[in-house]
Length: 362
Image 1 (tube, one colour):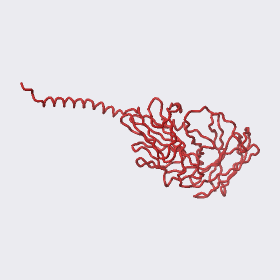
Image 2 (cartoon, rainbow, N blue to C red):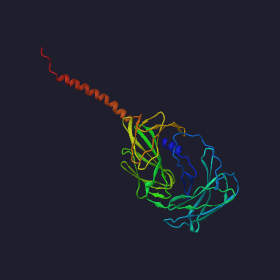
Image 3 (tube, rainbow, N blue to C red):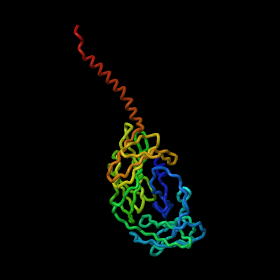
């Protein structure tokens, strides 16, 4: 399915830049939040990661200690007893992180925690995460300095505000898949929160627009948390929280058509750096004002035609014309069955006209 291909294609995690999402009560995972780039780049060869002093060091086997505390005031309960996880990751040759949790403890009084006998890798990076008031929070990325086996790293609970005006969109990705009688559209929105606070949209929703005639709407999970949504006509209301840094929303819907073509109009409530449009090669014809053709992309074995746009201001429309949509068999059957009916009507009309004519006088 194209949606799985597209989501797999954009999930490239950046340590220190992407959002760390972990469930301290289940599996731990790093979710990719990096927007897809216009053209493929060859894998970069990554040097050893720098330590806290900024100098790259060689691996040094041994055990270390990580201590710190959770700073902030939870809305519910206390910090004592919170599950705290220590994760270790190292970039492979293609620049993707490999690794996982290396320790798990419960916070003590005042949110203090301590990890002992931590396996040290001077080329790896570490991060601490926990869940407070149902929200996943994490520390900065760190590594062990060359001159010590002890690190102090705190986890700060960000404040929660309702001011969504600071949100911007670094990329809106539209993947368009042909289906008989319509197209499936998958939207992947990379939203950026530059503030140090969590932006709360659980009471006053973040509103997006989708075509009023869309069907089979589905919100696609991008992590361990559920995103509540409501759809009223062309309005999609998203009830969620946006953490500092990159946040991703993904959803899909079906756009029906009866005649092999349609027009898709999109606008977003925040300024968008670029819109990227993808469609499997050899299928649909996509056009529109401002679309810039890009290099063909190969995502998980599927080749895509790619177009990008200049920055799209909030509220401005992007209009896409989509042709080459397979016509539904029902429409074809109705059209074919209408031909003999039409011809029969023409014959009957012709006969009636001839019968009404008066005979010529001799």
